[in-house]
Length: 376
Image (cartoon, rainbow, N blue to C red; front, side):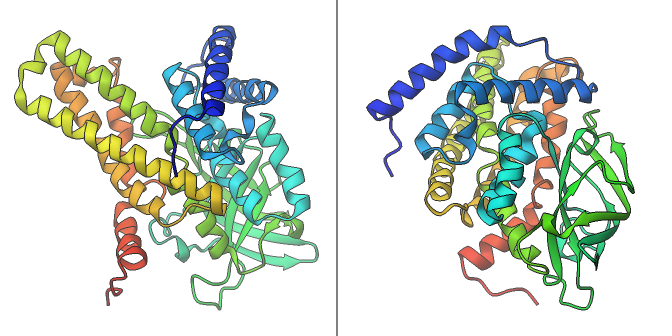
C-alpha cells in the first residue's frame, strides 16, 4: 500500500497542524506523575478536545494514512499521548469493536471516544504472567451474573478506571487455553480492592486488584463463555500490533535530540557513539515501516496479524538500546533522576516484559510465522 500523502492526506495534515497550533496553548498545566486523579482529568480532557474537533476516531476507523499522520503530527507538536485512556482506546475499545455485540459497542465505545470513561487491564496474575493461560481467577454463573473471585497484578490504571477488561476461568476442568472468558467488569462493584504498585521509575500506574465474589452481569461478557482465549488474542494483537505506534514516533524524536545533545557536549566525536546512533536510526526507520504495515493490515482486516509480535519483540529491545545510548550521551548526568531520559531509561526495562515477554514473542514468531515445530 502506498502510504505517501495524497492531496486529501496533505489537506488533513495541514488542518491538523493548524488545529494543534491553536489547541495546545489552551491546555492546563500537566499534573504531577503521582497525581492520578489529576492525570485522569487531564487525559480525559484532551480526549474530549479531540472528540469535539473530530479527531477521536483515528485510533479505530480511520484510514491507515490518516492514523499515521495523526500520530506523527501530534508527537511532533508535543501533544499529550493517550495516558490513562491507553487501555480503553488501544486495547479494550478495539476488541469490543471487533468482537462485541451491537449493544456492547453502543454502550462502551462512545464514552471512551468522548473522554468520559477509563479502562484498565485485568489479565496478569501473580502466578500467570508470561503463561497467561494459567490464570486462576474464577467466575461461576449465578443467574444473570458471574461471581468472580481471585486477584490480578500489573493492572494498568486500576486506581482511576471505570471498567476493567477482565480474564476469568469459567471452566476449571477444561484445558488451560479453554475455559477462559473475557468480561467487562465495573470497577465500582462491591468486592473490589485496588492496591497501587510503585515501579522502578517511581511511578504507580499499575496496581494489584483483589476480587472477592464480585458480581459481573453475564451481559458484560464479550464473546462466548469459555471462548475468552480467542478474544484475548484479538486484544493482544492490538496491544502488540498497533498500540505502540505513537511511541515509535516519540523514539525517533528522542534519537534526534540525542544526536543534537552529543554534538553540543562533545560526545559526537566518538565514532563508536555515532555508529550506535546511526544503527538506531536505521532500526527505528525499519520499525516505522513495520508500523505502517501493521496499521494497514488492521484497517483492512479489523485485527492486526502476527506481524505485531515481530514489532513488539524488536521494539522492546530497540527502546532499551535507545535509552542506553542516552545514558552514554549524558555521561555522569545519567545518574541524575531529574535529567531528561533518565527515568525513561528505567521504564524502558519493562518493555521486554509488558504486552507479552520477549521469550513469548520469539515462540510466536518461530511457530506461527516461521512454521518451526514446538519445543518438547
